[in-house]
Image 1 (cartoon, rainbow, N blue to C red):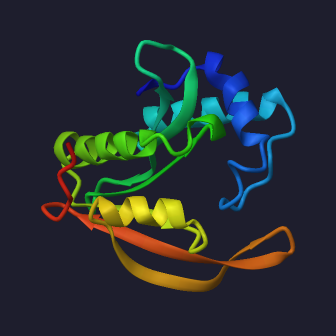
Image 2 (image 1 turned 180 degrees about the vertical axis):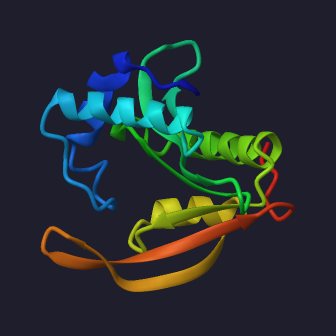
Length: 170
């Protein structure tokens, strides 16, 4: 993982204009490159304001972005953060998400001294839920009809990891 850069915008646009990447996320597909550039700017601004951290995920030995990840929101008063990310479809099923989320957890708990990390996920996203549970996240809630998107309501589940209860992955 590395700091996200404006040069990542074209690949972010490719990922976020693909309906598969957004399948379980209540957001519109990106319409043009400018949307991705604005996202990079917002991500960098959130970091400057200590409200979030966004990284570009890259393959080892490469500079090409294959996903984004980090902390969407950081609550320093309560030592809590919300994690999230996305991965290029070509990289699905390769355990890359496991490696990335493990690194995010380690950074959050050990560098930011967080007490807890939460993830908001569609209950239909079985892959993400399996990953979270494997890493020690516990389902805290299931909110029915939580999000109105595309003219219909969708449920949302909240998973949380408490410091000292994470699964150590090698």
